[in-house]
Amino acid sequence: MAKYKTSTLIILALAGFMMLMMVLSPLMPLFWGDHEPDNAAQSQQTSPDGRIPLDNFGKLVDHPLGSIADGLNASPPGVIMAQYVRAGDLEGTPLAERIVPHGFYGTNVSDSYSAVFMDGSQIGLHTLYPRKLLLGSSIVAPSKYEGYLVLIRNKDLCNIMGDPCILGPRSKVEATVDVIDDESAPNAYPNFEGLLENVDLDAPYQEVRMYSPIEQYYAAVRPVGGGCERTITCIGISENATARVNELAANTTDNLECAVAFNQGDLNLTIITISGDCNAVMAAEIN
Image (cartoon, rainbow, N blue to C red; front, side):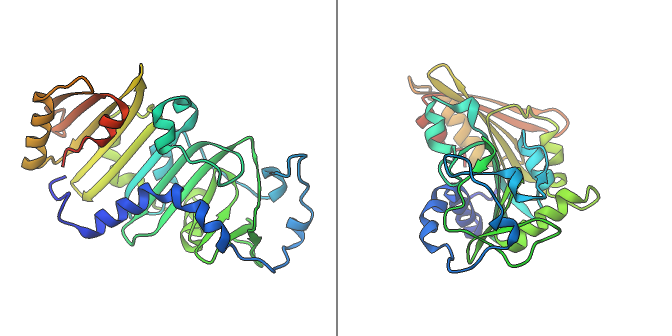
């Protein structure tokens, strides 16, 4: 946390990360066409609403997605920040409008995970409910990967379907398949393991960020009454961040309250709890 404002790369990556779900829909006009799908796609049967059941895609990805830890365990190494959303627990709250992805698959996304890597690339994992989707203008790639059909969304974006579906650049999607299918393959979880073993992983919104091997934080957001509560657990808090947190704690308002505990546990964690109006809570900065 000590270097929040010193890295342009991190700032740009964060901006791309938070906008990932928002930019997917505008990409649809770029989807490739004028290609014939392979026999597996041709034989797929649609439901009355035009959506195709996942089971029609043959071999499917199979990996649990109930927390940010599950997402990191499915991700190749090199993740610097990641986000997990469980949509059902946010339905009807202001948080749903801010962070729940809508519309890309033509069906609900019950669990969503996104990750940004050191090279700036991103992946998404999405559990669909019901388990069927609209293909839109996507096409099936001429070749499969490890027995999985690959849906080409545009020249930079593809899907491999399953529980969850994997979305991203083809190289990262294939690398994610390799991690999921091989339990011995290295993944992104170990870099966050110490922190995540000291937090609750049941929140409907979860986020981790890493700025160096020893400076990272985990944020959990929950709806509470008509507002929300955001708990940030930090390793390596800077002097500037400490001053900002103390300022927030000392200036309680009708819309925002902040409490902070320093030097918690063996990792000397800093735990910051910000509660109140959802917009104010999500906008509060500690860097």
